[in-house]
Length: 194
Image 1 (cartoon, rainbow, N blue to C red):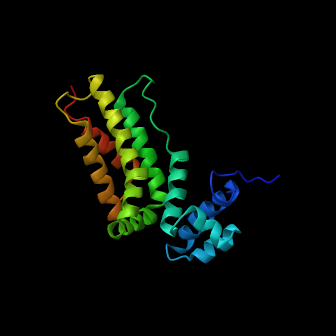
Image 2 (cartoon, rainbow, N blue to C red):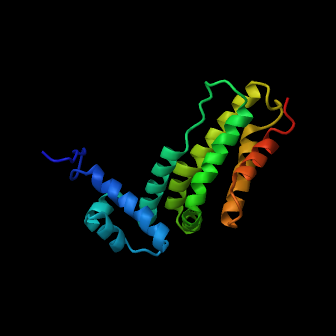
Image 3 (tube, one colour):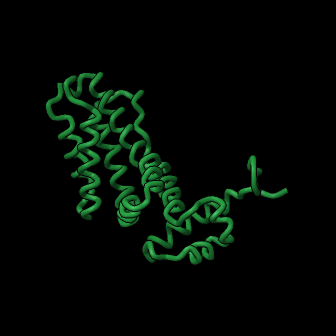
């Protein structure tokens, strides 16, 4: 018996091989930059080229999966069933996002660059990274609005777009994404509270 699990079609996939590829891809890109070769990633992971290409079409897609999986483990979705001011909830969430992003800012800038010339990659980046985080912020803001912490005439989706616009601007220009900036963004979002 092997550790592989059978898929509906094709050859079995080994979760350990996928984990090794993601781990080594992130490590090598952090150490050597995006120019690291697929061959180096495969060698470090101890798998075949076919193993990689059975899972991902490009190095960028492999890195997206690796980074998103890491982000999901490190940044908790706010629990809106808990009591407490939503300003504090959103500040904590944004600080966690910024802390995680600071580790891989160069990689995220590469993703943005790749997304400009590759519509399929752009769709994956939006679906797996941008939109889920936008919806989390919108949910917190809507909850704050329902609790009377934000005026009813404020648009949570627009506020979220402004928060994320400031985030991407700072990321692209390599400006600080620190705790103070996270707090300032949230403070501004809650300005004009009910």
